[in-house]
Image 1 (cartoon, rainbow, N blue to C red):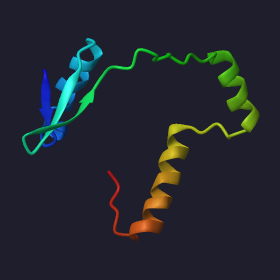
Image 2: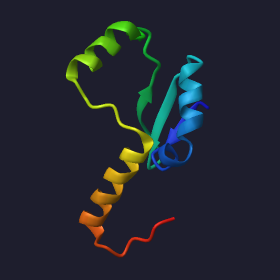
Image 3: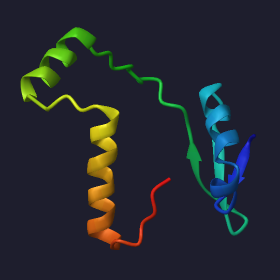
Image 4: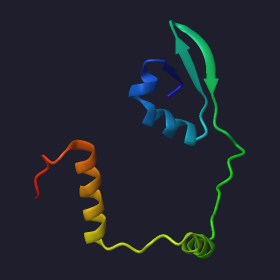
Length: 90
């Protein structure tokens, strides 16, 4: 992929991403004129996290442990509050 139109940005975005990830530069065309170039970023840094410290931080927040039944009950209460009592049970 050497060029892409502004309309194709929506429809062929996955092809654009794969082309840029391979290191190719793509020209952006609008009304038959090249208005810019999309180039890959060489300075991308992957951010890593420490899972153990993340779990400690989550535990520090003190959220209650919920069962699936309790999650479903809270969800139903919220939906009834939002949409009314017309909800049927599965």
